[in-house]
Length: 413
Image 1 (cartoon, rainbow, N blue to C red):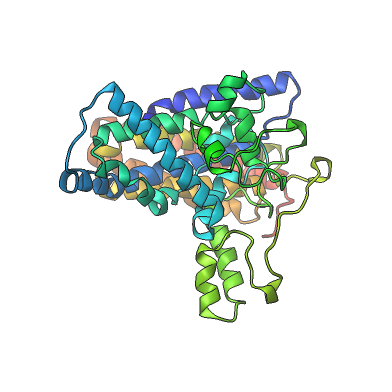
Image 2: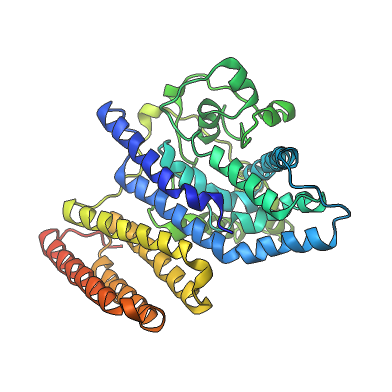
């Protein structure tokens, strides 16, 4: 069974494009190409991690449901509603813990790294968060909710949160704002202004924040600064998922005792021993003084990066659609190729010096993996794939060489 998120992908793309066009026509400057591609790349990686780990996570759910549930609730509209409310309640706590402990923040920080706030940010998701936070949702199978009901409730809860990542919708009627999470409430959640940090953790129902003391209303949307308190300066999606843990490790190596090192894992973000400076409180920020990270490449490489991203996105959708029918070897191979592809696309927008040769190696790997797959499993399509992939390879390499000689100033790192 595919996740509801998979079926929503075309609508996500259409709505992001519509908001971007609206932003351009109104001169709102809500989008930057490099940031948007980075958001989509992290979304691609998240969906791939989801299907790879789905068997482990969903298998545990089914095992508990089949062996440790004293009663099974019927599959009805009311059981679905109850499951949705319970899921959202547990989501609130999972989300809150993800902001209040280093271990979980290290995974969740991915979602907050963008310094923009638009619909594409909703797609910017961690690749490992579900693995380390899934235990929080285990009361649901213990209470007898059918696995399909759980999947649908989780999917609906996640789908709801897509539309609240926008600056194009102001505050809604008071009754809606009181009970539900809205764009206004969620803008607060993504802000790094000290008064807004660690507020509004709800998924669908903002009443959880009102009940447990973490609610904050939006005071002035024009003053909000988005991102994380220590600016993330990279378009690399793998590093986006790992950099906070590297930072934790670096700080732990400076600590004197094992007790402090172990406490670091579950300490709140910003905690340090007194001799290392003590707790690092968020600093006041002024939107006018913030310089956004905007490493970018010049025109030919930028256009090349966009082309390769579109091809990678199409390939990723095909991979997710056919995941259940391909062998384990090709599941892992294609996952590796896609992850490598979005890594290199990120490096293209950072204009790394080594990117041309790395990209040629990647193109050869794509060529070999696709044609070997069609050779074994889709022989009747092999000739078409050989022609298509060869044309794409030649065009890509030619484009790369022209770009290399016309744009010689490449970053050294």
